Amino acid sequence: MATETLEVLIKVVNQATQGIQQVSKSLEKANQSQSKIAKNTSQMVKQNNLVAASFKNLRQGIVAYIAVLATGRLIEFADATQRIENRIKLALEPGQRIDDLFNKVAQSAKSSRQPLEATATAFFRIQQASKTLGITQEQALKSTELFNKLLTVQGVSMHESRSALLQFSQALQSGRFQGDEFRAISEILPSILEKIAAATGRSVTQLRELARQGKITPRVMLNALAMNAQEIEAQFLKTNVTISQGFNILSTEIFKTFRELMKNQSSAELIAKIFAGLEITFKAFLKAL
Image (cartoon, rainbow, N blue to C red; front, side):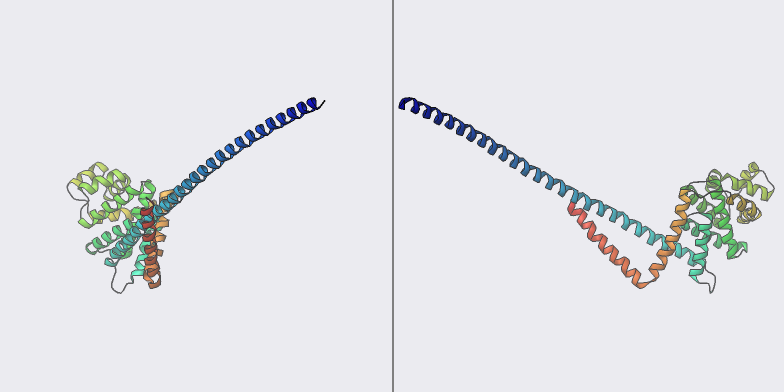
């Protein structure tokens, strides 16, 4: 009896031992799993930190890049504003205020939806030619605006508008509409040839021959615009504002605002601080590389 009891106890102990061993193995496996999880978690944290650092550097880079673009744009506006003002100053009449004439030229550019700088350059050249033609400043300004509106009616691109304005005003200043100026404008704005032909009573073909002979004078060109003013205005009113023309109007307003800001000492100091801030941002961009 005692022997049977002992055998039962041994079996129970053996079963308990086996159970403990199994539990121990399970715990060991659990510990190993936890270690792997901890290791994986640590790696994930490191990877997340690397990703976060990369995004931080990317953000700094983007901000700095935008700052560089903004700086370049600001410099362009400052230079262009000064160039525009310098040209308008040269067209001033005795006792006339620069602000008054600047606003007139800007209004002419806005009314015709053409670039302000090209308009100012064309007006300055026509004004210079007006001294020998005997026309007033207002007539020179009106001629510039009519030519601008003719460009708008024709639907030429922004680049072509600038080119045509400069070529036209250059022809007026030189005293002859021929050579490169004639070829460029006849390609960009063929309708001006029809207007000049009508004003001279010649055909377009005859006009080309006159151009080769250097017989199309500034007076003929300006008369052609004046004689067709009502037609040009009527055609212009039928047009809709394009995106590039809207940008021209907006740019003119920005030029006016920027010019007023630069006249104010505190605003000029603020702009200087903006440049200093952009410099710091640019240095951060270089460090982020």
